[in-house]
Image 1 (cartoon, rainbow, N blue to C red):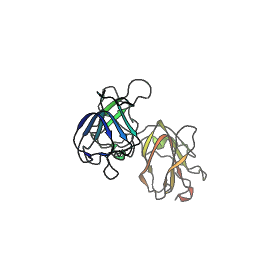
Image 2 (cartoon, helix red, strand yellow; image 1 turned 90 degrees about the vertical axis):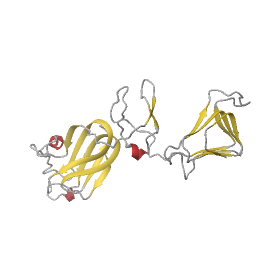
Image 3 (tube, one colour; image 1 turned 60 degrees about the vertical axis):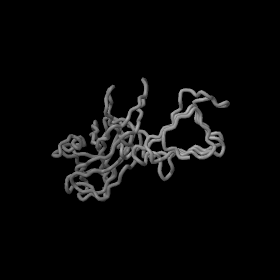
Image 4 (cartoon, helix red, strand yellow; image 1 turned 180 degrees about the horizontal axis):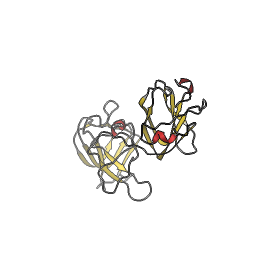
Length: 273
């Protein structure tokens, strides 16, 4: 039995095979109770055509407030498999949840997220919930538009380095002025690194560096840590770095600090960063 139109019943027992049509938009089954008995199958979507594959296609089972004829064992307001099979196949999602990248005022109609909606598999028309983390009530909303992703700069509140010259300190690397430089001249083999502490723990999609030609290391690691006392771990390795602006993808969450660690043996003019 293929359910291609809306249907309203008091109670429903499935002893055979009932499948929602996965090519018809917004099929609704309204029922006081639904029981899939032994040998019965309720299938919503399929591995080949999960619900959501086709635009506008949704399957809804609405359990009514009460049934005129209650089930003698389970009563009403239930969906239950008593030895039967219930299969639901929804559109695969890259992520089912994300975090806000900006605070949202009450009544706002736009959310800024830490992950791209398209990468997560979210679409216009999908319903999302905004959950509270402390007090208040969570709310439900419908996606009406998805704008192209925009960059949000994360402020750097502190810098430090393994080595620096007095007139070319680490702070110059994050002052927004390309004419001021940081240099690790005369630093030891393990001293050619620059650390940047972020204003808040956040999701970082990428980091940009500006290297002066030719005094830079074409090989370096980008390391991150998630807390002030946490351990560093490598988020990216660069082996063909060039001078000028270089963008390194990271896509790492809960980042507290970022460190660029130059490979000493690759430096053209050793002692320079």
